[in-house]
Image (cartoon, rainbow, N blue to C red):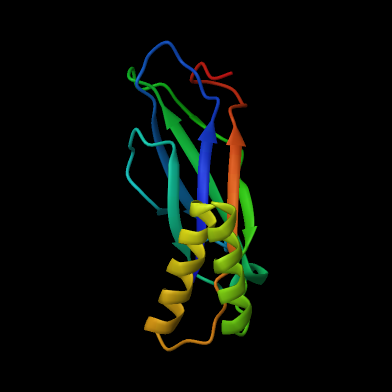
Amino acid sequence: KTVFLFRCVLWEDPDLPLMYKYQLLPNTDNGVKTDLCDFRRIEALDTTLPATEGGGGNATVVPIIVDSLGARTQAPPMSVKVTIEELNIEENLQKIDERLRQGDTESFSVLVTGAAAVLNTNNSALISNSNVTLNGTGDGGGQR
């Protein structure tokens, strides 16, 4: 599985608080959307996405934003590539050390969590990392 950080920033509305939910869209027309979280005040979501065979490894996540009056909007979909590769422990340790020395605790945490997940499942998949930031655009909900 891959660890991703999705974030909605710069969304504004006079009817606070804003609530955020993220959905994983299916790779097929007859599939079902999967809620990655319930509506919550936190604008960011740290989550894993499964590597799928359908859709060429592509996963599409849609953020939904709602204000305190129930007005909602859907942000543009975000497509990410979820791939499985062989784990190179030496390379991963170098990346972890590099991020820690740079003070990049967010990337450090993602790398350590990902490596632990691979080791715990006895799987030889490399955890790919992605930070996706979405600026507030679109119609509805009063965002800017």
